[in-house]
Length: 167
Image (cartoon, rainbow, N blue to C red):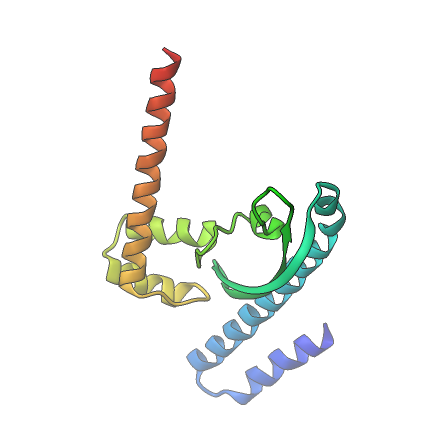
């Protein structure tokens, strides 16, 4: 804890410009949060080994992944498990709700969608880039909104098929 306080004190003393000083402090804290999150994810992944192996899975390999969360991009390593006759899986990603091939956490997407509901894609990107720990382009924001709309529509269609089948 003392080293963190010392580092922040050094930032405060080293910068005369108020805005630059505060930006450096924010960057320091965001990086600290991302490092702690990566360590926490590694700990949870380690703790899942016994439970997943009890389900008949074996560790296949470890892969690195990065995902943009509300506070920034987190890089972490997680285990991939395989079991004969079943699809390979990443239990840590499942636990966290991190979709395969997606770059944003559920909360990050939710925040982007909330801003985009009252702003243009360009203004959404500006807000995200200023207020979160990661950057997106207006095109990425627009694509997230479109995909979310498609997912909602697919869910509604599935619900209506289920309702029709139950009648």
